[in-house]
Image (cartoon, rainbow, N blue to C red; front, side):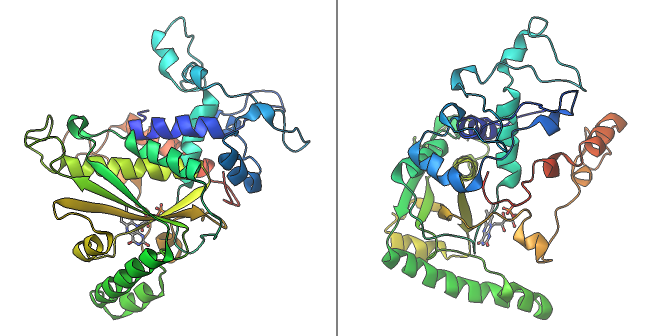
Length: 338
Ligand SMILES: Cc1cc2nc3c(=O)[nH]c(=O)nc-3n(C[C@H](O)[C@H](O)[C@H](O)COP(=O)(O)O)c2cc1C
């Protein structure tokens, strides 16, 4: 299974945060059932705040079994089991590159429990150290030609947030008009931003000229700098989830008006306007799915073999079927924090 650089970073961050249980019931349990148990949700923001989230110093309790101290330096050691069997590291030197089970599980828990947040923000401030960590996560995203075309404008004042919210209201009214009647009513009922409620707003921009006119990897696809910036957004989104922070992406904004409000130079492109903060709870499923707007598509419909539109081979089809519950096996029931 491929793990993207975005995901690996998320896992490393996650690895710092999560504590794990061993299999106390004995016997062989499926790999995914051995994954890390949820730490007490209400202490996660505190752990994130203190920066002492590793398991070593935590108090034991009956419902929270002994924790395994996390050592980041030892994260990439455990072999990945293949169909129930473990590879011997000595048989496969590559084994050292796999994430330890608990860290891999942390990655997947972060990834599958990430949500776009609009209505659940709490007023609780986001400590600057936590903000710094998620910004570092963003800054370590991949970028074409190592261009690092991003800048981050952090907004904390109500005054600026309020101006952006007004831009949203105008753009949202225009957007609503585009939908047909019934759909329009449904659209108007959706809450599509949490600009003022979120303690922190963040505008991530792209400087298309950051490293000169000719950029390694961009010759035939000049838009790669924009995509690189989106990688930074996703890194931040996952890191934030691992820190117990919700993120909501607001794209219902006129970019030129946004640039005027934030004083962004003409040549700089706004990529993402994000609302960031601790949340009351994380929804288990995308709100657009639960509200009946649109459902997640079956993955098998979207995977082609060798040529566009050509069916995948039986083995991969079987693999997709066997792993159909893989994402949901990581979902947190209460989703009140990882
Ligand atoms: C590029 C982009 C722009 C988005 N813009 C908005 C937006 O303006 N308002 C909103 O409520 N959600 C926005 N979203 C969030 C999506 O609606 C959300 O990701 C999707 O419904 C799936 O839900 P999930 O992120 O909780 O898995 C945006 C997401 C992306 C990736």
